[in-house]
Amino acid sequence: MLNRGYKFRLYATDEQESLFGQYAGVCRLVYNLALEQRRDWWRQVKANTGYNISYASQCRELTLLRAEFDWIAAVSIICQQQALRDLDKAFANFFAGRANHPTPRKRALNDAFRFNGRDCPWRKLNAKWAAVTLPKIGEVKVRLTRDIPGTVKNVTVTRDALGWHVVFSVEVEHDTPATFDPAVGIDRGVVHTLALSDGTFRDLPKERLNVLDQRARKQARALAKKTRGSNRRNAAHRALARTKAKAARLRLHWNHERSREIADRFGMVVLEDLKIGTMTASAKGTTAEPGRKVRQKAGLNRAILNNGWYQFECFLSYKLAERGGALHKVNPAYTSQACSVCGTIDKSSRESQATFHCGQCGHTANADTNAARNILRVGTQPAPRSAVGRPVKRKLKRVA
Image (cartoon, rainbow, N blue to C red; front, side, top):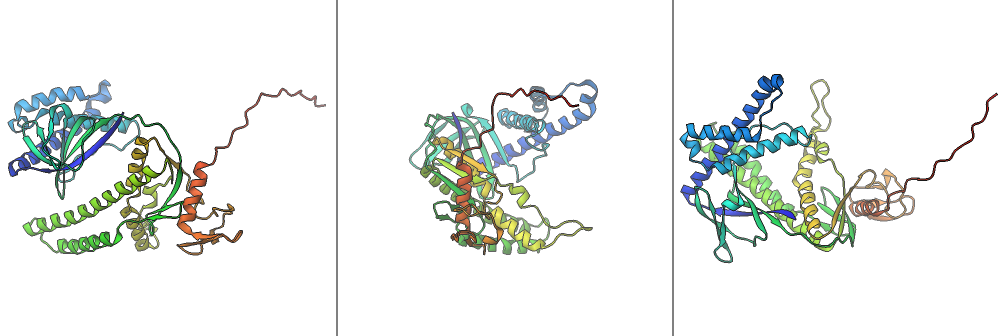
């Protein structure tokens, strides 16, 4: 079984959107109160008694809280319990070393609430529209862009700068036999977003992204001139957020399309195991030891993040798994300096950003294509076998 998420635009009435905001605010409050309670409990009680607070105990206290405040009781208890479950999972991930300590949720950044799938029946109206029934809110229209297969486990309502959306978390059957042929290596870069080992390239629509980037810069300058707290500043902030959301949506759509194309064509994909967080670290340094070429490094960081490398990797991973394929990651060391024909490693072979010329065998190719072929070679070569044998009993020599 595989879990898939299907996201659609919601077309709610003004009254329903007001309820959405109320639900998101109450769920955020419940999450933050529960987080604060766990922090205080850890400092004051657990250190002395060893007893820890749990999801079940906080659910019982939520019932008392709802009895005291009518405006909290007006919101469905289901989504409030889901907020407590999110916090419990966040602490479980923290103690397991998989995530940082949970932090409070902020308004406009975490506007979302979730229901169980069985509590939110949905029906298809026609080829383009559907309707989902949310507890205490009613039936809301959904712009249907594709069918929803499988069983709906959760229904999440989220908001971004472009409006409200619904995400159906669906459990689907997975019985595709494994197939790892053919294989391809992919080099992710800034000039070419994706360079494949077959010599082809896949590039983001950078012209459209540049237009949105220039618009965002202009809107950011206008925002900086507005008075804090004024209506004009709020309007300018919303306009800037919409522009950035459009760029993110464009990047998301492109990564979905390219990852599906590659997953349909290849059974195994080999990528470099890139530490993107380390690669995009600031070069600013400290007051005592200031960094060098800070502006150039900042521009490179923006270019890397704008390409959405990790997002593409995540999309490709689950789409390959659905089709019985596999994603393999290799050490990126020397993939851009080695010759894909003779294997000679020489950093001077990289004559420019675009050209690779091997001084040993004379091989010349696009530098990104050469790196992609090295990635494929490293990812598909058999692993070295360890020497396994029977122990040898040696006769000890007497030392005079």
